[in-house]
Amino acid sequence: MQRRHLLAAAAAGFAAPALAQGAARVLRVVPQSNLTSLDPVWTTAVVTRNHAFMVYDQLCAQDAKGEIRPQMAEGWVTEPDGLAVTFTLREGLRFHDGERVTARDCVASINRWARRDPFMQVLQPNVAEIQVLDDRRFRFRLRKPTPLLTMALGQTQFPCFIMPERIAQTDAFQQIRDPIGSGPFRFLPGEWNPGQRAAWAKFDGYVPRQEPVDGLAGGRAPRLDQVEWTVISDPATAANAMTTGEQDYWEYPLHDLLPLLKRNRQVVVEQRLLDGTYGICRFNTLHPPFDNPAIRRAVAMAVDQRDYLRAVAGNEPGGWEACEGVFTCGTPLANEAGSEVLKTHSLDRAKAALAEAGYKGEKVVLIAPGDYPQINALSLVTADILRRLGMNLELVSTDWGTLVQRRASKEPVERGGWSIIHTTSSGQSLTLPVYHLFLRANGPQAWFGWPDDPEIERLRGAWVEATDPAEGRRVAEALNHRAMEVMAYIPLGFYWQPSAWRRNVTGAFRAPATVFWNMSKT
Image (cartoon, rainbow, N blue to C red):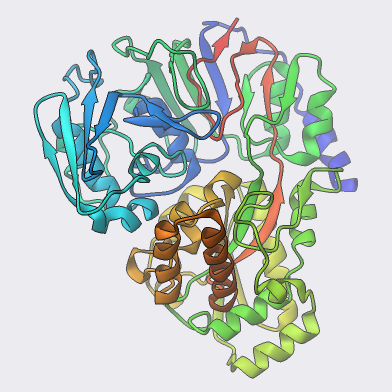
């Protein structure tokens, strides 16, 4: 309570007259974090995905029921034997530079995305080739029927965004710098100042689908002239900007400041994201001490998810929930097979396990993003645990953009590497093995931390091949059990993350991602 009162007082102290509205069709946004990468293939940072949903379009997309519907595609046809799927693009698609979108652009974009996407990596052995048939048509030739193909292409977690062929030919492990897409908004490179500001303008050449918006499918209409992001790292300053009308939308308000925002009649505070936000503690499995699974498991024994969730979301009733498994709680695959290690909640037992595992005082570098309050709070709880365990901790406080860049380093800590990072993910991203990013364990191709475990990979493939829900459930239980043995990451439970916007902002519909099309401002 004391922290909450201090923040509220600080927000009041920053009070200033509201700025003139100026252009009513400019939406001023406080984003969740700093935008440092424009490439949604190179990084999985959600802030980059939010940027990408404005700039790029998808071949197909998920509706509110999770079903895959055509987006850029007019439609697709699957041959009776299931060994070929032909996509046809709809008419009128153009990139921001005026060039037509063609099948060649789509094939190049799919090939680049497939090298990094965990879902498509599972399906890739089934793909014999992708053929360009003409300007509007391309075909997947398959070695065996692959009914999950359209789900992979239309997923929300790691979308297959379509880029011009010349850009999509960039290696998937190299960042692109050219932000040309065919989406509802154009990125404005001249107004991008990482750490401070980014802006997008309505793309007048965009032709939305005619159907009403449904989840992330349907008509993605750009109803704003411009979207402007201003990075405000101090939550009290951001809250003041919302209450005075200097900003229109705050993506991830600090939970301690929600009561202050709710008291303002001109501010709406609602849960816009459909799923809970799941926290994780990720180990770098390449270097000591966390190349040793026994040491990773020892740390997990000291974790109590409730400590993390209270640090982020306080004691608000219904604001969070422990979830001691790797799959999203409340979904068909959720289970706690083998999760006893997460139920230990004992510092003494963790210390004994750490000694037994042979920890020799190696340095542990934990990187915490000081400008991202929610992830920073998770990081500080882990830092406290490591200190109490007697580990040789170096806590590095930096900004989120720097963390996103640094986590790609595979160097040891003495050469700028890292040992532990934290991040969050939507619950939808953790529902199925095929796009569960943190569960992937294919070594150099895995997510940052790079765990290598053939058994997890075998089980992921087995889930794809499962012929009925009961078999899929058995595989999911085996995956949870094996994940608790490998312990490449520690699940930290989930919390609900509301957003806030001024009452004159309309069209902020609930979705599995933060998107700005179909929003208006009066």
